[in-house]
Image (cartoon, rainbow, N blue to C red):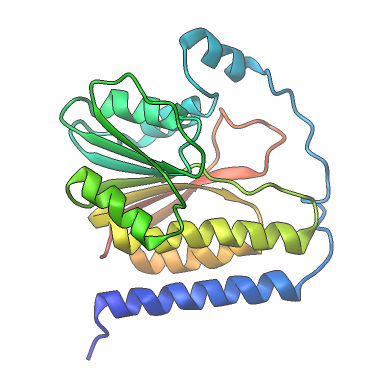
Length: 235
């Protein structure tokens, strides 16, 4: 008999977090890519463009680029962002979703309220806590069509530390899926090159019909980041 979906999801989450923990603590050293100090111009063209156009961060253009490719910010949907400070993605999402939709953002930091026609709820809390996620669902009046995460750990250049920190971020995203996402829903999150990503990607392929890795023009050329687009949640 097939295992119930909720129990199967819990088992998958536990497996992933266990593997991430094992890999991060068993393999030490500095990777060739992680060991290099990333030097970049914080005030690059996208930074200046964000200032000129009134966005809170240059990250707004990453979400705009993703949406221009895949069109997931549909009018009237419910969207949740994990780690939403300072609010650049919230600005883009709320503008696209419009007054019939709902956007909820969660962050440990206090986020300045948005001026938007869309219903926007801001929750100051830990996105890794299930009760905080349930609060987000209550704010929206139900589960979400779209789950977003632009969260990233502070990279040190030390392989086991960086892998552990990335594993924690991926674990937060994975833990949120069952609690907040509607069946057939979409997930988009930031990833970094490394073994921790390989583990979560394998698990996501069991949860979604399609999992695609994407590199953006709006990402700084010196960055190891990319995004993962997951559609058709099987919850």
